[in-house]
Every structure is written in structure tokens, then in C-alpha cells.
Image (cartoon, rainbow over all chains, first blue to last red; front, side, top):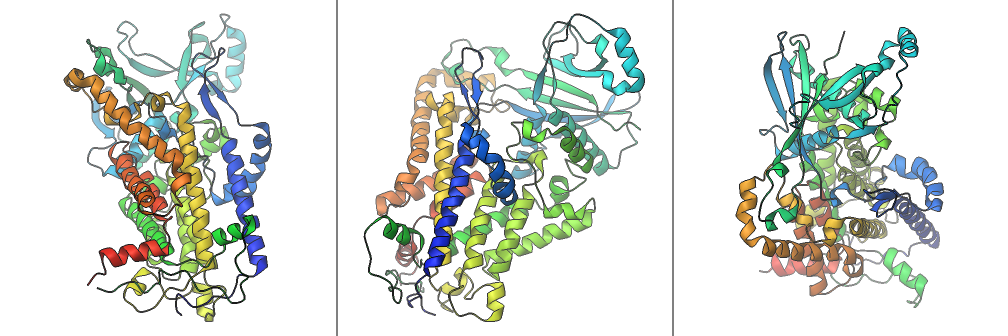
Length: 262
Length: 350
């Protein structure tokens, strides 16, 4: 068949169907993009900037098209790429294998410098996922010990609060640990943060994976994961006369023992 | 050296076609429903397939870690994620997880490895243009499956799903108006691929379906680039022209001595960075205005931008996948006459 051989004309119905598909397809994609959360915008109410939802008509349409069309076809990205926000922390994480005396016997670092570029990139993404924290609502000053104790009888785990605290409050050296404490013991009246659900689940899962891969599920007394974060360096550093050394500090946060408890 | 046996001329008018009429509907038809040269499609499919294959091969050996039920995110974690509905609440993960062919393997490593290996074979066949009506669908399924595990999900993974989606649309409908054998009806029409054409063993018939699917991808690509550029309006570092600084001077790799060494020419360096950032941004913002324009200047702007996007996204931002996607996206715009002319000019000269 020659490339110049005349083709039969495209039947009109094909053109009509093709037109309907194109218009519908890109209408759905366009509305999906319009419905994306935007920001941060300057706001008198939020010093760090405010995020705005898309227009209400997009909010109304998008759940339907997401479930019926974009979701099954996996066309759900709204192209507001996170990588457009060029400022971001850089992170890696380490897994420390400890014996019964609490001494670290082995440490693995991720991204692994010996892995290929693409695997290192995936580990970087995972490491950044582990840096997600969430603010906790400050607890009130009143302690309701009697009520808590009563509730703990039915579900002891429900009474634990997990939050970040300095490893050594006297040093204030950017080293934190994740503390699990009874709600009664949590400091009152101060802003606290904790690892996001996602970060905690991913950290636990990764430790399980490493233990499975190494076949050392029962070998260690504890397996701890630490994340190491460095803040981005502001460009104005190279125009300043005195470079502040504290820009180059590393924050280390210890998730604690993430081994599965029997 | 052979020259490509695809005519650079406009296609012969379709039998019984009406004379060209001015107006919106006429222009709409000529944009979407012309029988296009298959050469741009062959290039599009071959490069996309190579990009898919490269990625799959680079992760070979890590498929259980990245995709398996005992991988970085295991079944227990998946259940916790589901129970707590954390995925859609987090900015880290741009798209909620969906279905994956790799979930069929359960926690059986061997089955997952076989599925992964089959995926490589399928994508290789599709890249070569073999049985495209079947392999295009399977390639799309694999690209979707590949992006389903959220633990190390990268936002650009979904760009490959987009490529595979339009490749599937074109491949599924290619050749329906042409006489074909029953086997071709199922597997896809022959001749099969760019290589066949180059060897002179067959000619590639023009196709309404390939032209239509390629147009759809072009529009989608322009939307992606434009939306991403508009999104940058909310990012102060693009306004200040320092967007490239952060990737070029990643905190883990930059020491205080590096910064001190740059201080004597710091202001000039920032000027240079801003002179690079603004044209990048402008290129993305205006791509829909020049992507379809013919002529050496516009094609150089388009394709040169595609090459620089690849180099920049890998070299400066350290991001895989974005680069090949942008490059392939830019290459999808030139029509058959451009590629035939370029081929005959550069390669096929005796």
C-alpha cells in the first residue's frame, strides 16, 4: 500500500464521535486542573500564605469525573508539579541495628551511594516522605488522669501520644526523638509536632522490608530509623559578607525502635 | 543510504472529499481528521517505547522492593494507609494509588519477577511495532501498574502513563478503514515499524487514527507544559530568578567553603542564573503559541527547548522521566514532511 494511495474519506459519524471525545476528554482534564488547590497566596490570616481550593463548579464536577473517568485511566495529575517549588529540604535516612546493650552494631544509609542513579532518586523521594510532620493541637492545662486511666483499661494503646522532643533538652543540638507517652505525661501548653501518619507507616514498612531482606528479624534487640534533614541554602548567602554557619546544620530525628513487637 | 519512502507531499485528496471550505469546522476537520503521515507516529512510538524500556530495565532487580507486596511499602502498610486514609491527605503523594497488575503476584516474588519480565518483553515488542493493537494496551497496563505503589511515587511517573494512553488510542484504531486480514484485525496492521520502512520492505500507510491520537497527545502536552508554567507564578523563586540555585547547590553537597568561594562574584552569578531561569519559564508559557508553527526558527525553538529541557531536568534538577517526556513531547509536533526532509538531508544523502 502506498503512502500516497487515496484513503476513503472518514465517515461523518467518525468525525462527530471523534469531536465529542476530544471535547469531552479535554473538558474533563481542564476542569480537573482548574479544581487544583493553588497557593500559597498572601493572606492577612495566615502568615505563611494561604492555599485556596479551585472554583466551586470544578469542585462539583471533579469527584464525578475522577471516579468515572480520570481515576480508572490514571490521568489524575493536575500538573501543579511539586518540583516547580524548587525550594525544599534534602534528606537521607539511616537504619541502626542495636544489640541488647543498646550499642549500634550496624548502620545502613539510604540513598545508598552504591545504588544506581534511579534507585537513589527513589530513596530520596522516600526520605523526603519521612520528613513530613504534622502540628499537634496544644493540649489544655487540665489533666484528666482518672478518666484516662478508666479508658486505658479498655484500650491501652489509645492512650499513647507520639510526638517529637529534643533528645537532650540541655544541648538543643537539633537532635530529636519520637516519644511515645501516656497523654498525662505530654507537655502542656506548648506547640508539639509529630511524624505524619504517612511518614510513620512508611518508616515502619521500610524497616520490615530491610529485616526481611537481610533475614535478621530476630537478630537485633532494636532497629531504629533516623532521618537526617538539611534546609535549603538561600541564594543570598553568596552576596553576604559573613556566611552563617548555622545554615549548614543537620537536623536528626530518631523514629525509635520500629521493629515489629510480638 | 536509502531515503525514506514516505512522500513529503500532501496526501492525495480522499475519494469523494468535498472541496476545502473556510470556516471553523473546516479547520477543525483538517486539524483532527486528516490522514496523517505515519512517520511522526513511528518516531513517537519508538522513542516512547525506548523511554519505557530504559526505565524498566534500570529498575530490573529492584522490582520486588519497588512494586512487591514485601517491598518498601508492604501489604501491612497498604492496609494501614487504607484504614487511615492518609494518601489523599498528604502533599507528598500527588495521585492516590490505584490498580496494578503487580498486585496479582501477592507476596510471591517469583510471580512478580515473571510479571515484570513479561512487561519488558511486551514493551519491547510494542517499541518494535509488533502486534501493536495488543501490545499497546498491555504497555499502558504496565505503565499504570508501575506507578501504583505510593512509597516512592514520583510525580513524573504519571507522564509515562499519559504517553502510553495516547499510544494505545492510536494503535487500537489504526487501520480500521483499510483492508486487513483477520490476524491483522486482532494484532494490528502491517507493515510493522520504522525499521521496516527504512529497509524499504514496506511503506507506511497514512492513517486517520494515528494523526488523531498524535494530535490529542500534542494538545495534552501543551496543556501540561502551560499549566506547569502558570503554576510557577505562585512560586517566588521563579519570580526572583533564583529557581535554578537550589538544585545547583543542594544542601547535602554544598559546604560553607563552596559558598565562600562564590562570594567574590556572587551578584554576577545570580544575574546569570536569572538569565537562564526566565527564558526557561517563558518557553514553557508560550509553547502552545509556537509548537505547531512550521519553519526553521520555530522548529529550532521547539526541539532545542526539548533537548535543553532534558539536559536541565536531569543535570540541574536531578529529575529523571521529566526530561525524556518533554523531549518526546516536543518531537511529536513536526509533521511527516519535516522528518522526511530532515532524514533525506542528514542521513540519506549519497
